[in-house]
Amino acid sequence: MLVLSRKRNEKIVIGDGITVTVLEVRGDQVQLGIDAPREIPVHRYEVFEQIKRTTDEAARSDLDSLEELRRLRRKKSEDDD
Image (cartoon, rainbow, N blue to C red; front, side, top):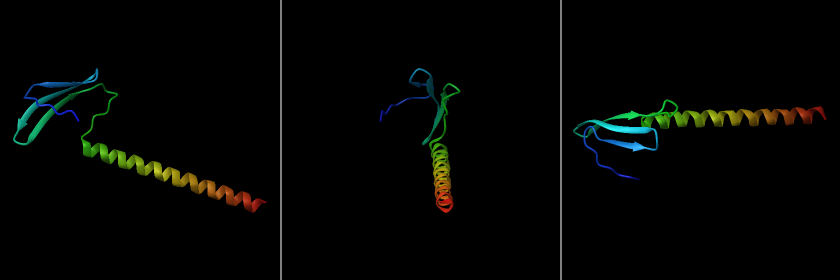
């Protein structure tokens, strides 16, 4: 992990298209401005984690449904024989 110290109005650059600017520092809270291309999603960490959990759950549900379909097809095939 890279650790940087920045003051108000100072910036860091990530790659070619992302700039993070320190807008304000109040006590233990820092306000950041993030300039990134539209195609790059930018989320607070807790929102990102919720999106990831929801996506993982949906994928597991899809896999469970697919496995159930396979099981039913095998059963139907066995019943037809």
